[in-house]
Structures are given as C-alpha cells and as structure tokens.
Image (tube, rainbow, N blue to C red):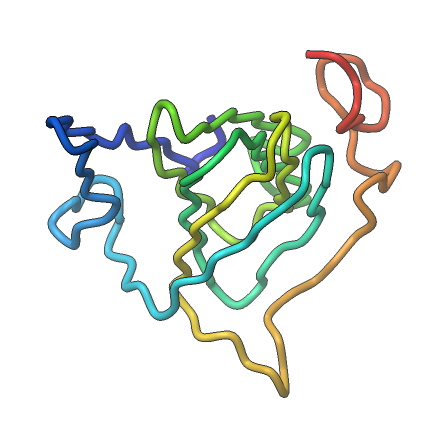
Length: 161
C-alpha cells in the first residue's frame, strides 16, 4: 500500500433483524492518524461508472466506505520526490465485507462501480468543500500519464483484473 493509504475492516454485528456496524469512531487512532472529519457525503454510481481522477493539494484526506454494491478504489502517486512515485493501489470494497479506506488527498484517486447493481458510497472528508475555491485538481479517467506499474502502459480502468 502507498504510505497513508489504509484499509480498516468494519465489524458487522448480525442479529435476527439484520446487522449493525460502526463505520467510524474517533478512537480509531492508528487508522485516523489525527484526522478530524469535517463533512460526510453520499455518492451513487451506476454499474461501470468511473469517477476519476482527482486529488486534493491542501491536505484533505478521504475515507471511503461502500454501503451498497461493489467498488474498485485506486490511488496513484505521481509526486516527483516520492519514494513511491509511480506506485498504484487497487482496492476492491463491497457492502458484503464492510471496510473503510483512508486515502491521503495528495494521491490521485478515483473509483469504479464494478458490480451489476448501482453502488452507494459513503465518504468522509477532513476539509469542508469550498464552493468558491475547491481543493480539487482533476484529470480525465483515461489520462494516459497515469501508468500502471505492472504493465508499463496507461492505466486501464476497464482492463480485466
């Protein structure tokens, strides 16, 4: 994993009614790394939809949890002076195995709905969205400058895994 990218398994507590799960707690210190959540968002994507690439240069950290469906989350490091320059992480998260993924915003990141049904993604962020001056740089989902380190070719969201 890229430094700072973490996956935290969510404990499901089933009972005769369904289940209960704590998605986020401030006492998860090793996972949070001192982050404070400022905003919670919900995103629905249809099957095959790719939401990529973007990053946050002013310190935002994203926490991503799939509450319905299946999503592949990717993070890519293109920082010139980074020891992990060119590294790419692919993380599949589903509602069947609840997890929350921490992504430092300086990595280019995005997600693709990989299931046969729409996905619902709950994501928590450490900075409020500023409508006047958003902390968001964007690239096209098929930007050829994001290289898959396994193949040496541009990253392909739609290539078989």
